[in-house]
Amino acid sequence: MVNPQQAAEYERMRSYYLAQGQKQSFKDLWPRAMKARLELLDALEGVTDAEADWSPAPEEWSIKEVALHILKNSRSTRALVQALAAGKPGDTSGIEPPRESTATPIKELQTQLRDDGIEWSAVILDLPQTPPLTPTARHSMFGELHARAWYLFQRTHDLDHQGQIQKVKAAPGYAGKQS
Image 1: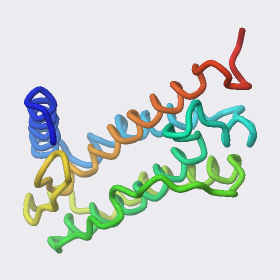
Image 2 (image 1 turned 135 degrees about the vertical axis):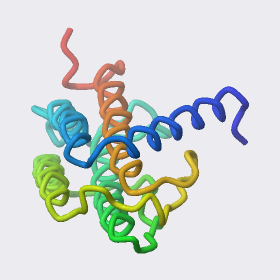
Image 3 (image 1 turned 90 degrees about the vertical axis):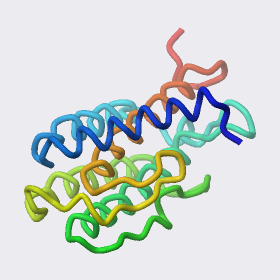
Image 4 (image 1 turned 60 degrees about the horizontal axis):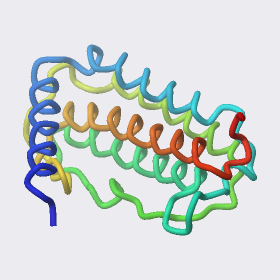
């Protein structure tokens, strides 16, 4: 159950996504989205596989788990943005991928996240400048969002999880932590 303060924050963010998405084109939103992806990639820079596999506690995610989650979410969100911008209903089933361990090396996850960021950049060239504000697709926390609102959501998602990675790196016991 969401407390009233959290519900108010979700509504504030939803309003932001919708308002910014209504008044700004994909090209206008692009710098913010790409800056967030670059900051995410910077947070992963220099992380070894041992560091990426480490978790501060059993209930907390490792850096690799976070990276895989972002990658899966990003691919699903991009497909959703493309569908909604084309006026088609979108599939939100992959938007919130669960925690999952992976044997994929962190360097490969970094490469895939970089390539995914490049695909996000390229996709806007094929999207209508002014996509319809309907249809929308439901986000579990933010409610119904249109294509450009979902595009902006990905920026927030990248930033939130970049913060999660920084938290892991700052935790006591993290091997790569500077003393």
